[in-house]
Length: 223
Image 1 (cartoon, helix red, strand yellow):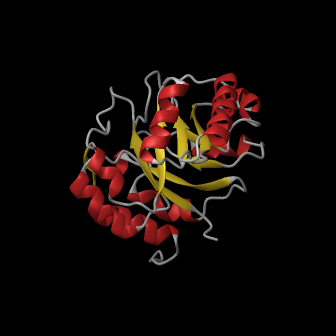
Image 2 (cartoon, rainbow, N blue to C red):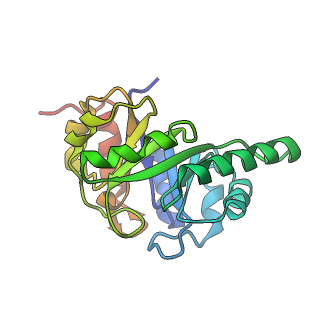
Protein backbone atom coordinates (compact mmCIF):
# COMPACT_ATOMS: atom_id res chain seq x y z
CA UNK A 1 0.00 0.00 0.00
CA UNK A 2 1.21 3.51 -0.84
CA UNK A 3 2.39 5.54 2.10
CA UNK A 4 0.39 8.62 1.08
CA UNK A 5 -2.70 9.05 -1.05
CA UNK A 6 -3.44 12.09 -3.20
CA UNK A 7 -6.82 13.76 -3.64
CA UNK A 8 -7.20 16.31 -6.43
CA UNK A 9 -10.21 18.42 -5.57
CA UNK A 10 -12.32 21.10 -7.23
CA UNK A 11 -12.66 19.44 -10.64
CA UNK A 12 -15.36 20.97 -12.83
CA UNK A 13 -13.87 21.29 -16.31
CA UNK A 14 -14.49 18.25 -18.53
CA UNK A 15 -11.51 18.71 -20.88
CA UNK A 16 -9.05 19.44 -18.08
CA UNK A 17 -10.36 16.58 -15.96
CA UNK A 18 -10.06 14.17 -18.88
CA UNK A 19 -6.33 14.94 -19.03
CA UNK A 20 -6.00 14.73 -15.26
CA UNK A 21 -7.36 11.18 -15.20
CA UNK A 22 -4.20 9.98 -16.94
CA UNK A 23 -2.30 10.69 -13.71
CA UNK A 24 -4.60 8.33 -11.76
CA UNK A 25 -4.84 10.23 -8.46
CA UNK A 26 -6.19 8.20 -5.56
CA UNK A 27 -9.22 10.47 -5.07
CA UNK A 28 -10.93 13.08 -7.24
CA UNK A 29 -13.08 15.70 -5.55
CA UNK A 30 -16.20 17.46 -6.81
CA UNK A 31 -17.71 20.44 -5.05
CA UNK A 32 -21.50 20.54 -4.65
CA UNK A 33 -21.56 23.96 -2.98
CA UNK A 34 -23.28 26.42 -5.38
CA UNK A 35 -21.37 29.44 -4.04
CA UNK A 36 -18.03 27.89 -4.93
CA UNK A 37 -16.20 28.92 -8.09
CA UNK A 38 -15.52 25.19 -8.56
CA UNK A 39 -19.15 24.12 -8.32
CA UNK A 40 -19.87 21.18 -10.65
CA UNK A 41 -22.35 22.06 -13.39
CA UNK A 42 -21.58 19.60 -16.20
CA UNK A 43 -22.67 16.08 -15.23
CA UNK A 44 -20.59 14.63 -18.06
CA UNK A 45 -17.54 14.87 -15.81
CA UNK A 46 -18.73 11.98 -13.64
CA UNK A 47 -18.60 9.49 -16.50
CA UNK A 48 -15.01 10.26 -17.50
CA UNK A 49 -13.11 8.45 -14.74
CA UNK A 50 -15.48 5.65 -13.67
CA UNK A 51 -12.99 3.70 -11.54
CA UNK A 52 -11.80 6.65 -9.48
CA UNK A 53 -12.61 7.12 -5.82
CA UNK A 54 -15.07 10.01 -6.08
CA UNK A 55 -15.38 12.52 -3.24
CA UNK A 56 -18.40 14.82 -3.04
CA UNK A 57 -17.80 18.00 -1.05
CA UNK A 58 -20.89 19.39 0.69
CA UNK A 59 -21.49 22.50 2.79
CA UNK A 60 -24.45 22.48 5.20
CA UNK A 61 -26.47 20.32 2.81
CA UNK A 62 -29.47 18.26 3.85
CA UNK A 63 -29.01 14.54 4.42
CA UNK A 64 -31.59 13.70 1.76
CA UNK A 65 -29.79 15.77 -0.88
CA UNK A 66 -26.44 14.25 0.06
CA UNK A 67 -27.82 10.74 -0.32
CA UNK A 68 -29.37 11.60 -3.67
CA UNK A 69 -26.02 12.87 -4.94
CA UNK A 70 -24.24 9.77 -3.61
CA UNK A 71 -26.58 7.50 -5.54
CA UNK A 72 -26.81 9.56 -8.70
CA UNK A 73 -23.06 10.17 -9.08
CA UNK A 74 -21.89 6.97 -7.35
CA UNK A 75 -19.80 8.83 -4.78
CA UNK A 76 -17.38 6.86 -2.62
CA UNK A 77 -16.80 9.59 -0.05
CA UNK A 78 -18.91 12.39 1.41
CA UNK A 79 -16.75 15.26 2.63
CA UNK A 80 -18.58 17.63 4.96
CA UNK A 81 -17.07 21.09 4.75
CA UNK A 82 -19.58 23.20 6.63
CA UNK A 83 -20.92 23.49 10.18
CA UNK A 84 -22.01 19.85 10.39
CA UNK A 85 -21.68 18.55 13.96
CA UNK A 86 -21.16 14.99 15.18
CA UNK A 87 -24.92 14.50 15.58
CA UNK A 88 -25.41 15.32 11.88
CA UNK A 89 -22.74 12.76 10.98
CA UNK A 90 -24.50 10.16 13.11
CA UNK A 91 -27.82 10.90 11.40
CA UNK A 92 -26.10 10.58 8.03
CA UNK A 93 -24.72 7.17 9.01
CA UNK A 94 -28.17 5.98 10.14
CA UNK A 95 -29.77 7.19 6.91
CA UNK A 96 -27.03 5.52 4.89
CA UNK A 97 -27.69 2.21 6.62
CA UNK A 98 -31.38 2.49 5.84
CA UNK A 99 -30.62 3.05 2.15
CA UNK A 100 -28.19 0.13 2.11
CA UNK A 101 -30.91 -2.12 3.52
CA UNK A 102 -33.70 -0.99 1.24
CA UNK A 103 -32.08 0.13 -2.04
CA UNK A 104 -30.13 -2.46 -4.02
CA UNK A 105 -28.51 0.22 -6.20
CA UNK A 106 -27.23 2.31 -3.31
CA UNK A 107 -23.49 2.15 -2.59
CA UNK A 108 -21.74 2.43 0.73
CA UNK A 109 -19.62 5.53 1.29
CA UNK A 110 -17.11 6.97 3.75
CA UNK A 111 -17.57 10.20 5.69
CA UNK A 112 -14.81 12.77 5.92
CA UNK A 113 -15.11 15.94 8.02
CA UNK A 114 -13.12 19.02 7.12
CA UNK A 115 -11.84 20.93 10.15
CA UNK A 116 -10.24 24.37 10.07
CA UNK A 117 -7.05 24.60 12.11
CA UNK A 118 -5.47 27.80 13.44
CA UNK A 119 -4.23 26.80 16.89
CA UNK A 120 -3.94 23.65 18.97
CA UNK A 121 -7.23 24.55 20.70
CA UNK A 122 -9.00 23.67 17.47
CA UNK A 123 -8.26 20.01 18.15
CA UNK A 124 -10.56 20.10 21.19
CA UNK A 125 -13.65 19.77 19.00
CA UNK A 126 -12.50 16.55 17.37
CA UNK A 127 -13.26 13.98 20.05
CA UNK A 128 -17.01 14.13 19.41
CA UNK A 129 -16.43 13.12 15.78
CA UNK A 130 -14.22 10.10 16.46
CA UNK A 131 -16.97 7.50 16.21
CA UNK A 132 -18.85 9.05 13.29
CA UNK A 133 -16.22 9.93 10.64
CA UNK A 134 -13.74 7.82 8.73
CA UNK A 135 -11.19 10.60 8.31
CA UNK A 136 -10.59 14.27 8.98
CA UNK A 137 -9.43 16.78 6.40
CA UNK A 138 -7.36 19.45 8.15
CA UNK A 139 -7.57 22.79 6.36
CA UNK A 140 -6.74 26.41 7.11
CA UNK A 141 -9.31 27.98 9.44
CA UNK A 142 -11.52 30.59 7.81
CA UNK A 143 -14.79 32.41 8.46
CA UNK A 144 -15.88 31.32 4.97
CA UNK A 145 -16.69 27.83 3.79
CA UNK A 146 -14.31 26.02 1.50
CA UNK A 147 -10.58 26.20 1.09
CA UNK A 148 -8.67 29.45 1.50
CA UNK A 149 -5.61 28.54 -0.54
CA UNK A 150 -3.49 29.48 2.48
CA UNK A 151 -1.32 27.24 4.63
CA UNK A 152 -1.73 26.83 8.36
CA UNK A 153 1.12 25.88 10.65
CA UNK A 154 1.47 22.18 9.89
CA UNK A 155 3.62 21.73 12.99
CA UNK A 156 0.41 22.11 14.99
CA UNK A 157 -0.48 18.58 13.89
CA UNK A 158 2.04 17.20 16.37
CA UNK A 159 -0.70 17.98 18.92
CA UNK A 160 -3.17 15.66 17.18
CA UNK A 161 -3.36 12.48 19.27
CA UNK A 162 -6.55 10.74 18.11
CA UNK A 163 -6.65 7.47 16.18
CA UNK A 164 -8.84 8.80 13.34
CA UNK A 165 -6.73 9.25 10.19
CA UNK A 166 -6.53 12.56 8.36
CA UNK A 167 -5.63 14.18 5.06
CA UNK A 168 -3.66 17.41 5.09
CA UNK A 169 -5.08 20.28 3.06
CA UNK A 170 -4.69 24.04 2.98
CA UNK A 171 -2.55 25.91 0.46
CA UNK A 172 -0.44 22.97 -0.67
CA UNK A 173 1.73 23.78 -3.70
CA UNK A 174 4.30 21.93 -5.80
CA UNK A 175 7.13 23.48 -3.77
CA UNK A 176 5.84 21.62 -0.70
CA UNK A 177 6.19 18.17 -2.28
CA UNK A 178 9.57 17.16 -0.85
CA UNK A 179 8.62 18.41 2.61
CA UNK A 180 5.33 16.51 2.57
CA UNK A 181 6.97 13.36 1.22
CA UNK A 182 8.80 13.17 4.55
CA UNK A 183 5.89 14.41 6.67
CA UNK A 184 5.88 12.56 9.96
CA UNK A 185 2.59 11.72 11.61
CA UNK A 186 1.24 8.18 12.05
CA UNK A 187 -2.35 9.17 11.22
CA UNK A 188 -1.64 11.18 8.06
CA UNK A 189 -2.90 9.17 5.11
CA UNK A 190 -2.46 11.72 2.35
CA UNK A 191 -2.80 15.19 0.90
CA UNK A 192 -5.68 17.16 -0.59
CA UNK A 193 -4.59 19.55 -3.35
CA UNK A 194 -6.67 22.15 -5.13
CA UNK A 195 -6.11 25.87 -5.73
CA UNK A 196 -2.32 25.69 -5.41
CA UNK A 197 -2.29 23.72 -8.67
CA UNK A 198 -4.68 25.81 -10.76
CA UNK A 199 -4.52 28.15 -13.72
CA UNK A 200 -7.99 29.32 -12.68
CA UNK A 201 -10.73 27.80 -10.52
CA UNK A 202 -11.39 24.26 -11.72
CA UNK A 203 -8.53 24.21 -14.27
CA UNK A 204 -5.57 22.22 -12.93
CA UNK A 205 -1.93 22.59 -13.95
CA UNK A 206 -1.56 19.00 -15.12
CA UNK A 207 2.24 18.93 -15.23
CA UNK A 208 2.53 20.32 -11.70
CA UNK A 209 0.01 17.79 -10.39
CA UNK A 210 2.06 15.05 -12.08
CA UNK A 211 5.30 16.29 -10.51
CA UNK A 212 3.65 16.45 -7.09
CA UNK A 213 2.27 12.90 -7.33
CA UNK A 214 5.57 11.55 -8.68
CA UNK A 215 7.50 13.23 -5.86
CA UNK A 216 5.21 11.95 -3.13
CA UNK A 217 5.37 8.45 -4.64
CA UNK A 218 9.19 8.58 -4.76
CA UNK A 219 9.60 8.72 -8.53
CA UNK A 220 11.31 12.14 -8.31
CA UNK A 221 14.20 12.66 -5.89
CA UNK A 222 15.39 15.95 -4.47
CA UNK A 223 18.61 17.25 -6.01
